[in-house]
Length: 73
Image 1 (cartoon, rainbow, N blue to C red):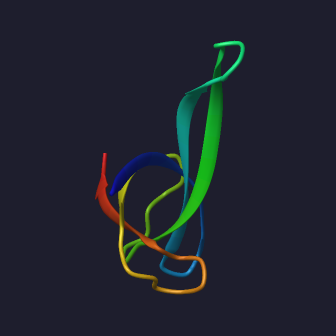
Image 2 (image 1 turned 180 degrees about the vertical axis):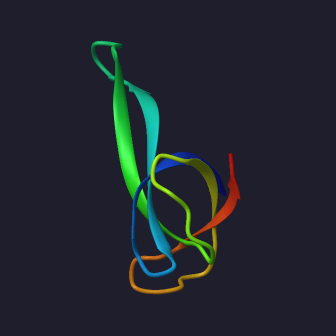
């Protein structure tokens, strides 16, 4: 599985926090809402905040880390 998001934090060692935003339609009213989720992703090289990246699902690397950076866009 792959997700595209923006790096919001790179303060951890070999880890970045990626925020993935999607639009979800409200069940009753039909209005689209912006829903965002934050994932911790593994990164060997340092990546600066604000970059857009593609992350892919991998085996659990730690308590919170289940994603790895596939490419930097």
